[in-house]
Length: 162
Image 1 (cartoon, rainbow, N blue to C red):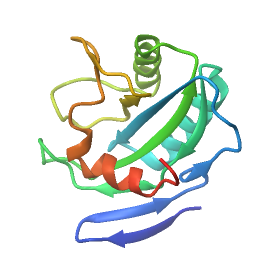
Image 2 (tube, rainbow, N blue to C red):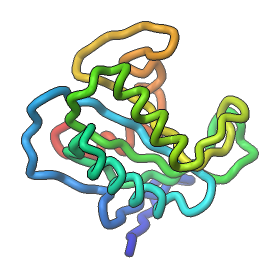
Image 3 (cartoon, helix red, strand yellow):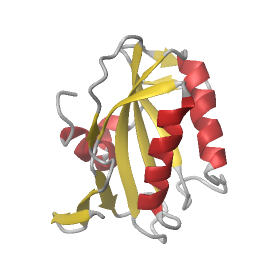
Image 4 (tube, rainbow, N blue to C red):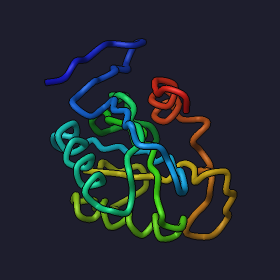
């Protein structure tokens, strides 16, 4: 049900049923780029469940997803490889409402925050929200490290027209 291609020394590109995905929907509201990741349990299956959770939510419309990148952890390295992808969504939510929504989704999918860069079932980061620049204690946009992370840059490069 999925195809794995080795890229580089320690990275793998994975294609599943909905990663990559391109919708025929035209955007009409606010465009946000979400980064998703995880390394506990069956992450590919969890990403498929997340896809349907987002699609059915009514809060976002999925416009496009990238293939999944399987890559080594950074920061705390004594843990399994991570799976990462990016999801482009159209939303009527404000940035802070979208943040609350994705934090709710993480919790629903079993996210526990034990320490920085810890293993996790699901991590969802808001990478960008349109062209907004926000610098608040609970939300910085664009995400401060997105341009330095292969976990965002490679999946983003695999998307069409983003």
